[in-house]
Image 1: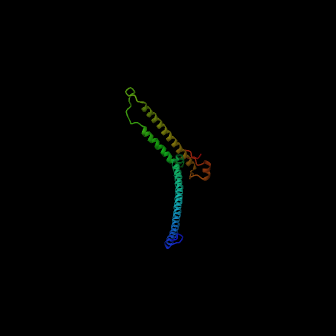
Image 2 (image 1 turned 60 degrees about the horizontal axis):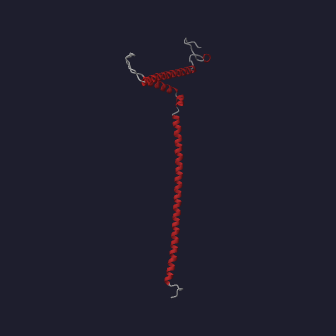
Image 3 (image 1 turned 120 degrees about the vertical axis):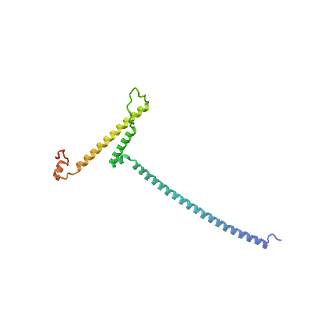
Length: 183
């Protein structure tokens, strides 16, 4: 047999090779398309996750800033006292009373100095603290009563006296002496 002649079996092998090449190429194209689609899907999912994380981070930051502002407002004691002076006065009085009650001693008969045992430095510190707390409580009550007196006087001068004419009220500024005569 001549090696240059192609037999039917050789033709079949060559046809099978060509067919196999075509099928492998088609399979390669399908796998490549599938991988490309999967890459796009993964990239889209990653972008969605990134945007969701950024939105959530922004929301959490906003909530933290709002919480910080609310907490700062809630703990601004000076502003609260300015806005609600009566409640502040009541709290000062209550604090003074509580401090006085907590530091006061029980009613014991007085002991003579010679029969009284020596007390330690802590007892002396407690006595000093009690005296200071009483002094602070008394000063707070005095300041609250002074502020209350000033507030009442300020309101009283602004109130009109109903039995006087407008000209008399303007002249006397609504202030009366103890004998009923205007100033």
